[in-house]
Image (cartoon, rainbow, N blue to C red; front, side):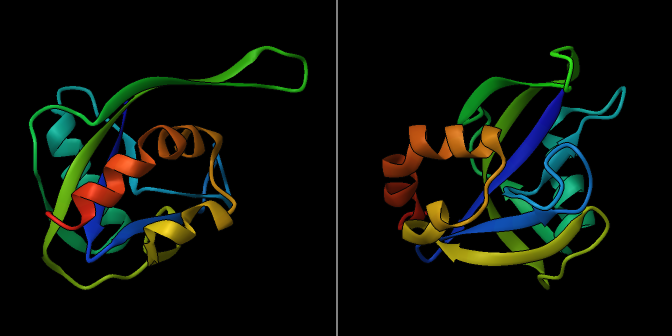
Length: 140
């Protein structure tokens, strides 16, 4: 199980450039895997702190979306299979800096997101939720 934090602020979304596989070198929201015995919400908060140095709070108990990310190897076999839960979040504190699994971290205007080399799973999420994210970014 994997989690992602959709952190919105002033018409922007926080994106990180992944340092590790899957999706190395591509942009996505901060997140990662849930440890055994860890709650998904707690994993989301931990992953953002580890990757970006920010303290966040989850805005809604329900994820914005839940979906499967299945990545095949060169022979067509499953290499990775994650069930991902993306939570709407907001920054509570900390200073943005790329750390651990992130090469870079930056606030990106929502209208510029598609210009980035996004992971396939985040691109699908963004295409599905772009209008909602624009609306939410003014109220979070």
